Length: 327
Image (tube, rainbow, N blue to C red; front, top):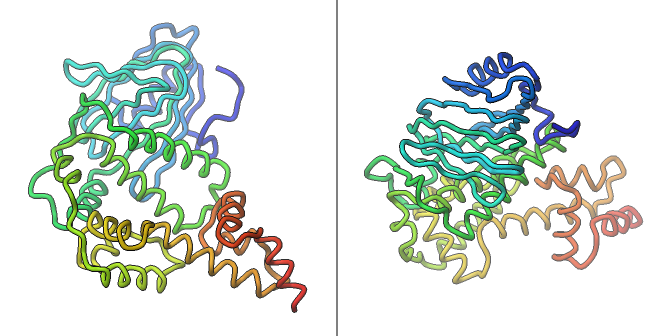
């Protein structure tokens, strides 16, 4: 395997040519119960892993063909192939994982994964409790039965493509700004991954989620906007938003689309951009554009500048310079 900076290298678990060392890491960190290598001479493995409040995000790669067995877990596993090929064995079914096909292992489902030589992937683990909590917010009521996924069903597009993009984006952000990522941004990225996972993977509530949502009155939309505006510095948590407006997230999003033409998250971004502009115009010499961006929940300065220019027609640095001149 090439000497490169692998995804999530800020959170290393192991990099080794010793199969026994890899076996021990897989057992102690990931809970694997079985491990076999086709050719121990050519073996090399690397694994990085980061645990967040509701998800785990990792990277692994193998130079030689490797087989790993995992027991049932209280989480869903998404494998995003970056290079090479692998297969996920679920009972009598084998699912392909590569750059074009992601693999999903549902909660409470044991799996055997056959990693081809040179295979590399990102792995997303989502706690069952987080999936059930998000499903309740989407439906507006707690689900009547256990959430059951259909792993052999093909992932739904374009949600599947978005899920892959979000997973890669979060891994990139955590690798480059692990000590800098604003807490609200991290919470909202986690939330987006959970929601998108529920949209991309078929399960026993898919048809209900795809049925038309009841649209609340425009007054509910304004109530949601007022709540977001009053809590602009905090993460927009869908469960809180549903509770505050006494409606399901599906219905609320449908109402936002009809009466506003944007989503609650887009509204939250616009509020944060306006707050950032106010701070920039203050021209405080003891702060900077990057510090203001971070304070307003923007982790990536380039994305912040682009969004700011789209909204206000000028760059944050230009507004900041003007504010300092007026001091």
